[in-house]
Image (tube, rainbow, N blue to C red; front, side, top):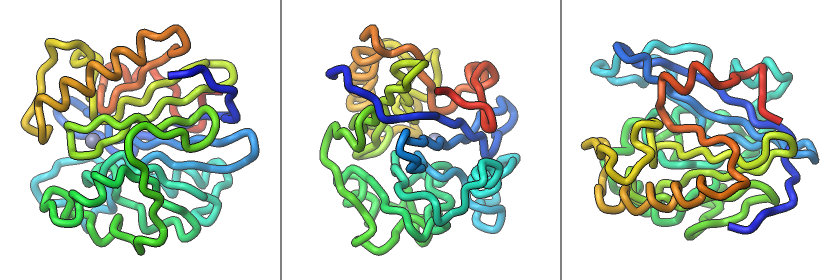
Amino acid sequence: MPTQATSLARLYLMQVASVPPMNIPAVCYLVQTAGGSSILIDTGLPGPELLPDDLTAELSEDVLTQIAKLDLKPEDITTVVCTHFDMDHSGHHDAFPNAQFVVQRSHYDDAQNNPRFEATRAIWNQDPDRFIFVEGDHELVPGFTLVETTGHTVGHQSVLLTLPQTGGVLLTIDAVDSEANFSMDRDVSPMNEDEEAVRASTAKLLDIASQDEVALVIFGHDPQQWESLKKLPDYYA
Ligand SMILES: [Zn+2]
C-alpha cells in the first residue's frame, strides 16, 4: 500500500465493555482529522435492554458518554465506518443523525438476510441513502484506508491509519482478534464464518504490518494488549 500524506490528527480508543472471565474488551474508535471532522469506527455494544440474556458483558461507558468527554455531540459525527454488523460493533449506529455509514457492499448485502446480525438490525439498518458502499480496499480520506478482510464475516473490513507522529496504525478489528492469532498457524474459532478466508485476510494484514510505515497493530479483542494501549481521553497523534 503506498505511503500517503496524512490529514489525520488523533486516534482515540474506547472500551465499552468487558467480557468475563478473560476480560475480553469490546471496543470502538474515534479518528479526528486535521480539518476537524470526527469519524467513528464502530459504535460498540447496545444498551442493556438489547443485550441477550446469555451474554455476560460488563458494560462500561458507552460511545456517546465517552465522546461527550471530548465535547463531541452525536450530531458532530460525520462518518461511521462499519467494520461489520456484529452486535459488539454496531450497537449505537442509530445515535448519530448526521452520519453516513461506510460499509463493504458485500457485507451489507449479506447482512440483509443473515440471522447473525439480527440482534442490532433495527439499529444498523438505517436508510440505504445514508450508506456509502465500498468494494475492496478504499482510501476514505488521506491517511485513512479501509482494508477488506473478509472471513470473520463476509465483507469484514479492517482499517489502516497514518498518524502524523505515531506513523502507521493498523486496526485489524475482528480479522485478527488477538496478537497470538497474528500468524499463519493461528486458531480460527467458530465465531468466524469462513476459515480459509480468515487465513487469507490474516496473510494480507501480516503483509501490511511488515511494511516499515506500520508502527502499531491494534488487535480486535486482545485483553493483554489492550491494557498496554492508550485509551480516551488519551490518544495517539
Ligand atoms: Zn467483535
